[in-house]
Length: 164
Image (cartoon, rainbow, N blue to C red):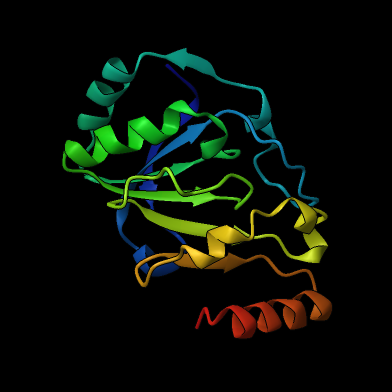
């Protein structure tokens, strides 16, 4: 069972998949409280969904690109097995994660979009920094920047971690 906030079909607006039709599966819950969060409604709103029934619903959409997002989708332990189930079913799975939860158990067929928490977010101290060490060439790091100090901090992280 997963607690699902919403399922919607749209055009991916960020990253290397920008412009592609994408199905978004937003899971409920997030332990972080970033100051600029635009999905606070996903902290608590949602319904428990049977995974087989949810997968049947997802198959009805005209895309095989799925963005698993939240809140923080990996805060639900069942999300890891569901990602494997999606990949087994032929989905291209992209996970938008805050970086708070270790990505180690993720199916290697999934792509990670890691939102590195800058100081302006108020949540830098909650980052699971080893997630950056696990990024592969097809994964992406995302930095939401709140001014010059966040930019310089982000630039230093990219250089020190060799993310570019």
